[in-house]
View 1 (cartoon, helix red, strand yellow):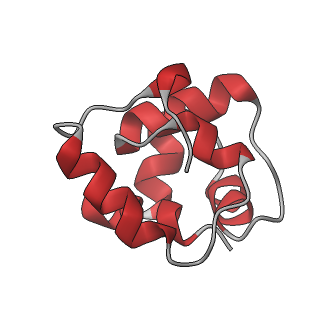
View 2 (cartoon, helix red, strand yellow):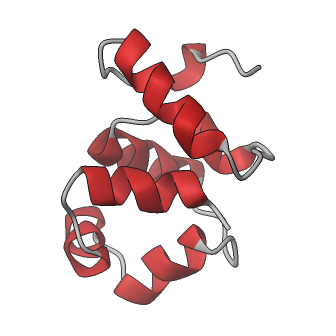
Length: 90
């Protein structure tokens, strides 16, 4: 499960339906990506990351379940700006 996605969406104050509408995908797609049943295309991952202010590369890395706390710290340290392709993983 991609806990960091769920927490980032909730921090943004968005429901799955609202995020799905913003991204132009189904609510089911949002759910399946959040539970790691599907992977988004790079194009969708970049749009999703921009909407939630997270590094897009997180979609393709094996992150531990405690990543949500690390993600929050990263967001604070980076001034809340996504790092995109320049993000360096641990």
